[in-house]
Length: 79
Image (cartoon, rainbow, N blue to C red; front, side, top):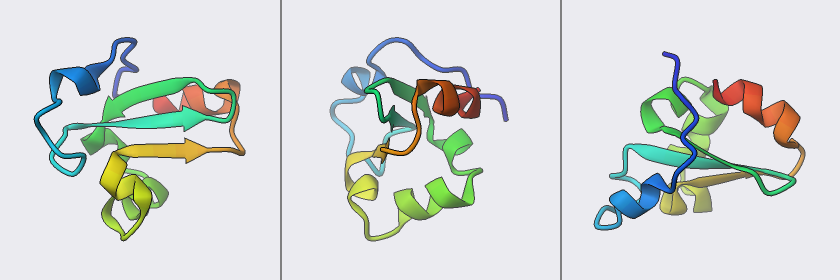
């Protein structure tokens, strides 16, 4: 599945949903760039799937922070 990177705050459109119900998740690079991607596309990655389904803060917030990845590394992964 090829998921587009959205450049607008999609989470505002779904403000009445919990993070677990939202169809989007946000990936945050170490230099502060945020990539809003479809949850379905993010779940292809075993790492993200574990973060978003497990007993982690990411599952509650719908936001995954990657302190080790800068924009240039994380952006191609979001395509």
